[in-house]
Length: 130
Image (cartoon, rainbow, N blue to C red; front, side, top):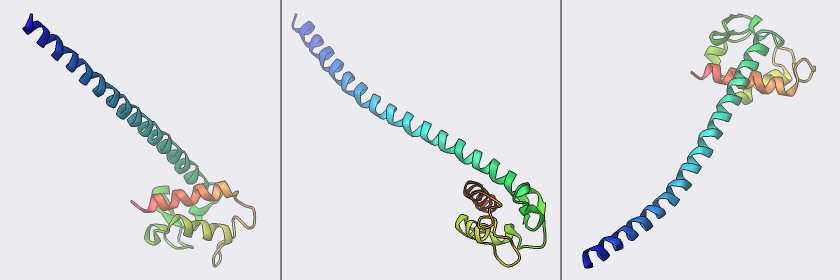
């Protein structure tokens, strides 16, 4: 009976330890799921912005006619090569919004919306940072 009581005691201790472990594991696993799905949503949002930015670069903004950008398959030679310049998102946003040199002020002249300028700025920075 003493052996049985010892075994029962160990089983109870093991069950308690397992219960504590499972509680910790649930918290860790739940946090992992939150982070994982947040990252997935963020990656999807970035992918959507890249697609929109490329479309604006090649179509509505017509940036490709003046700028070289390998990612967009553009070979313009009026403005600077964006591949060489590697501008930040803030620099692109500033230039697109206000214009620079012979480049029109796409924002100030209401050619592009603020959302379109954000998308094309995001795209150019990411496309040139590889």
